Image 1 (cartoon, helix red, strand yellow):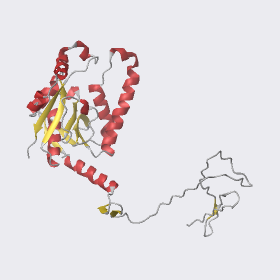
Image 2 (cartoon, rainbow, N blue to C red):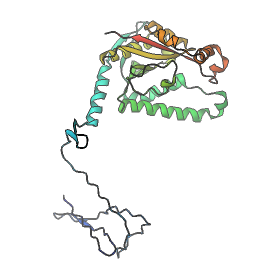
Image 3 (tube, rainbow, N blue to C red):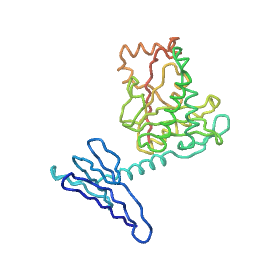
Length: 309
């Protein structure tokens, strides 16, 4: 059904009218209103169509047609292939999902866990897992703990959901026992966002994959689920042609240090030699009672593992 819009301009006052649109072909009449932009106050149009003073009128038309294949810059004298961002994004997301191999891994206690990409339906369970493991409230914030927990939970959920639906610079991996989510891992791709980890020192190379998080439910620890997640993340990066993985652990997180040591991670000599006095002193906060309640930030170990092929 086609519609004809009429727009009249009078010479004296440059008046514009919105004309009712008539549908062709015996279907009655429909009224539509065109948007009018003015620099002054706009009064409601009455039956006599009061004048509206305008300074300039800009019309933008979107044309339908084939997507251009070439972009020509006459000033620079260059011709480039046009980028189709939507297709590029879909292609990258498909490649990332395919790089996470679905598998069933035998655990230390003869049980098993299913490894695969984190899915949209898993994001709430993953949020609860992250909050249970990592959310801490400083003593001075105790009275506001519920509000802070809610705000942090919303941020975590939004970040995970965005990672599943939209992200092209990270991989989210899930571990399940039965239908229950029991662990997650996150890998930031080379030059991707690291959500705060870029501030850790020593600094991991930005052009290498980075294992941002490995989280396992406390009731499932000791079974080998964390190791299964780490190995799945490494295999994913090998599939993408990467040869080295980096991560950080806090100096007081003995469980994470033990896990990564079993998986073959170690602090490189170049990182040790580059430590400043301030960073060395920060590592000494391991047994500081103020660090245990979040009043003092503890130091980090930066770990590296060659992935091989």
